[in-house]
Amino acid sequence: MSAPRQFFIIAGEASGDQLGAALMAGLKAEGACDFQGIGGPLMEAEGLASLFPMDRLSVMGIAEVLPRLPEILRLIRQAADAVVAEKPAALITIDSPDFCLRVAKRARRRLPELRTIHYVAPSVWAWRPGRAAKMARVIDHVLALLPFEPPYMTAAGMPCDFVGH
Image 1 (tube, one colour):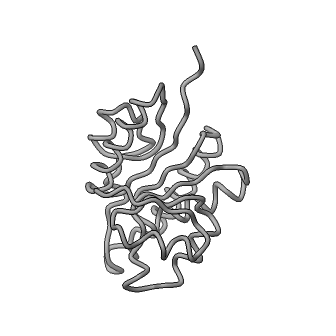
Image 2: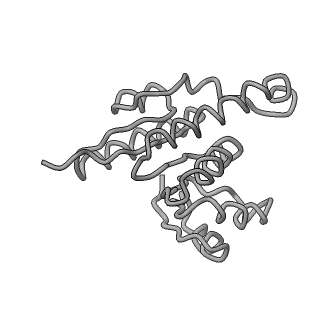
């Protein structure tokens, strides 16, 4: 029997927890998997050993983020250090790009061979079109919720599959 595939998976909000739990169930159906990372109760029910409670990442808006910035920066470092220590088959980040892409960048700097997958394409078609090009520096593959998103991601240099909700 072969060793289970190791995945480090990060979700920072309830919608990401739902998507992550479904993704984990799908991966497990394909074979033995171990999950480390950050998630909520749904992902934990699928077998995630969460590094810290996901709600520590659930902040929005400058007024909420600024007072917690030192803690958020520490959590980014902590998550990236855990990715490096685990050396997973892949780092899978779900939505929450401000947190997740920083973790991916820090981890990739130390593990250049790390495979990275981002689930939920940022809405670069609506705003911040430069984000896709920045993502391409640290993300190997994107899983998109909307059928018209893949061309935006592939134009920036990232393979992208439409997977729906």
